Amino acid sequence: MLLGSVLLASVPTGPARADEDHDRARAAVASGQVLPLRKVLEALERQQPAGQPAPQVLEVELEERRGRWHYEIKLLQPDGRVTKLRLDARTAEPLRDSRER
Image 1 (cartoon, helix red, strand yellow):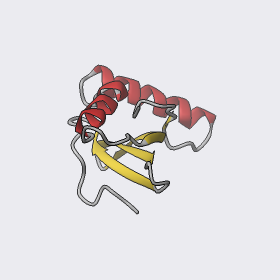
Image 2 (image 1 turned 180 degrees about the vertical axis):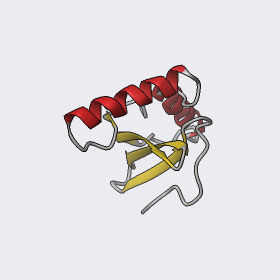
Image 3 (image 1 turned 90 degrees about the vertical axis):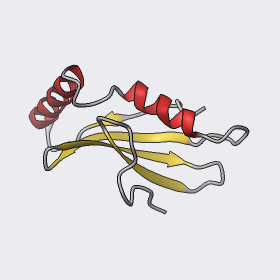
């Protein structure tokens, strides 16, 4: 199941900065700028082809760059590869060149 263990983190640069980042992320979710992580993972799970094993979520980061929020999700694929997927945090749509090998 895709909704395996998940680590949600901001860019850690120290305790005070981490608290500020978490507060900004919570405010972005509350204001509708960012989808809650649960909804993003549910959208990914719906996109999984039927009958295929789902990748395991290893790590999730919510980041803001140039005024745009995005989720970066690290996945362990059933064949053992680790991939990264970048999604628009407001729509859960993949960003261009979002999959890394």
